[in-house]
Amino acid sequence: MDQFYYIIFAIILLMTVGVELKKTAADGNKVSQEKVSNIFAMFRNNYLVVYSLMMAGDWLQGPYVYALYQYYNYSKGDIGKLFIAGFGSSMIFGTVVGSLADKYGRKKAALTYVITYMLSCATKHSPNYWILMLGRFFGGIATSLLFSAFESWLVAEHFKRGFEAAWLSQTFSKAIFLGNGLVAIVSGLLANFLVDNMELGPVIPFDCASVFLGIGGLIIFYTWSENYGDSSENTSLAQQFSKAASAIASDQKIALLGAMQALFEGSMYTFVFLWTPALAPRGEDIPHGFIFASFMLACMLGSSFAAKLMSRPSLPIEKYMQYVFALAAVALLVPVWFTSIEVPGSADVGGITFEGKVQLLGFLLFEICVGIFWPSIMSMRSRYIPEDCRSTIMNFFRMPLNLFVCVVLYNVSSFPIANMFAMCSAFLLAAAACQYRLCAIASSGGFIPSNTKEDDTI
Image (tube, rainbow, N blue to C red; front, side):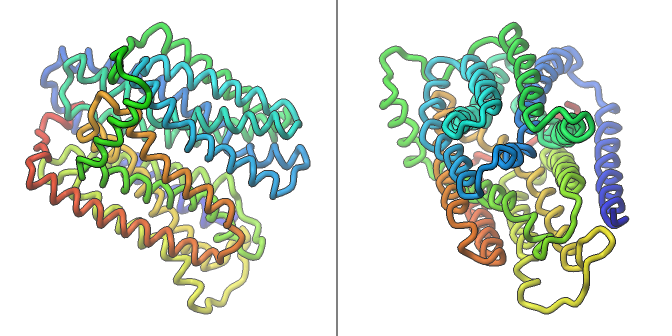
């Protein structure tokens, strides 16, 4: 494998370790509110363990879903329909389960995620197309719960227990650092070891995922308390939808937040489908697993940056995220630029060309932005979305996202890759414009709180 990959990985690793050590050293110099911090640390660590187990159950499956369908000898068209079914299920049923989570309890919703995802994993043992399709429906519902129920439970429980609001952003950054970074890397390596080294077959990652999901489910069942949005018996599902829609329509801050989330995540999921053909347009031999690990490490670095940014009293999230969105847009313009020029070069030892290396650097920059995005958007959601319909609104935000991804999947072969990246870059610039508007509204309305120096101790 080309030394270029090792050098890039080592640089990102050193930067991540450096940022984390610097942050840890700063945290160790402050011991304010020790009793409260210890109680909070127990609460936070419990959530981080559960979130990491839930994300492990998700990440273990990711690299082998497509490979499993190929193993069962399905065509690209059939596989595409399966993926569309998953996103479509999340779009159609996700809002319903989000509303049910607000009404009947977020703990129950978290346990429902465990059950539905384990059922989805179980369907992978069958080569029958319609059983696999059922698994995709279960997976779509589970994905909606993963990205709404757990965050909603955390926010409600955090404030119910009387913890400082500023501490919540630190929990978000640690959750992304672990669940979307470290756990993703370890899960990918574990799945690769089970399939390639131990030769246990392409279904074993899904069985392993079920084990992690089951362990997390037991922790939730025995240690989490229940919390609700609007649990009134007189509130119907339709009324819950109406309340969420009214909140979005009447509060421009919530609408802008939803637009930013849909625009960024839509670009992010499109990137997931496009990075491989972009780096290997002529079928060059590239180390997919190592590149994926590098992406996840870059995401970890981004979450570390986010923790530092969110602890600075002079730089509110609403302000710095404008630049993060703009930087992400520039990063995804790199493939567009290379289509407009002729760059001589042949495949190197590792198979990747010079333009491929430059594009990889741009993609790593984009992943750093992803790492900053997640804890930052979570923190803004906790501030602006009303508690009584939090899960419902969060799943409303995912409807345009899932619709967009379905359209992209259906038409991915109809447009040049450069055009797709240009579209993603335009979406990210639109997200930056929405963030600029949100910052202006929040500043004029006094919604941007001033973080204190002590916030960095958690």
